[in-house]
Length: 396
Image 1: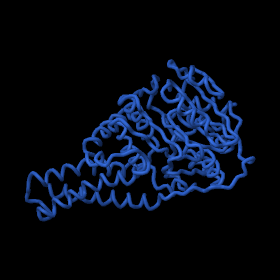
Image 2 (image 1 turned 120 degrees about the horizontal axis):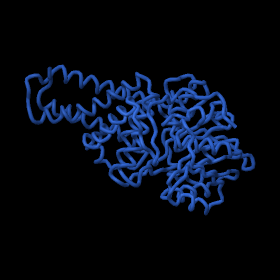
Image 3 (image 1 turned 30 degrees about the vertical axis):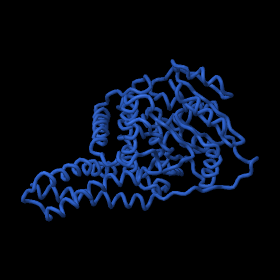
Image 4 (image 1 turned 45 degrees about the vertical axis):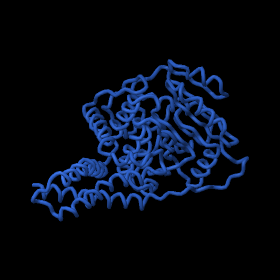
């Protein structure tokens, strides 16, 4: 039994590492910069949905006001904040919409984005979160890129700022998202319908593309509007473009508490699991099994010497230390340019990943049972389809 378990473990490790090498090899993305005269930059409508964002909104709006872009409008859509969000927004020359009423079958963020779209006038629509901060040159580069690639939807992964211990756990979730999402080259291939990814903190559409897609109205029930819109884009053979890391935009997602972190990712996992193909889900499970078994076999080799050892004892120690470290190095290689990190955090992945694993299991359980999840003081059912379009046209 021990020999079989070890053989299965080693086989899973090699499958995981070969798959990861393939992902890295096919995930090299570059910016496509279209030269545009200053007077020819199209109007960009920047839409920021908010709900109780008093700790974030000022930093976000300051960065948006300082964008080196000649032709933009900023629209903040508030879902009825009970903190000082509205008061802070009033200090800025932006269009402000406050709509506390949430219609049936809508998720709050998607409804806010939809209202912002209805108010917008831009040829380009940028949906971004209140917890983001934008470098001055970011909008010019992003607009040049979406026009240069002729994409309908462009999204990038903002740099993730981490300060509290639980914020570093984000790296593992994004790593598994990378495993599930597929190679970036496949994501950017409009004919590969199995690979898709978008990050809701930065989603840019051409107006025509957004309307042809059906906008947020088409995914109004989805807990993960970003993944659902990306999947819908592929289903309609429209052009999706994704940049897998950038320091042009940064974010600190959960600065307030571990509970916010827990609820935020529980919502995303419970909704996102509905969009995952079986094969990609299987690869993610392989990595989770690898995580579970790596510390087990490493400890086993140190504390006992059973008869079923395949290798000499010393070789076994070296091999299992290597396999253990390979998991940590894999996550580090993926994350090192995408967010803050401390090298020793990855060495202790059995502890940190265990917290993530419990959250993943809890979220999947909630999703299959159709239990409600809470986010931003609102409760949402997980019993829904997150990818099927709900309407073929945007309500005007």
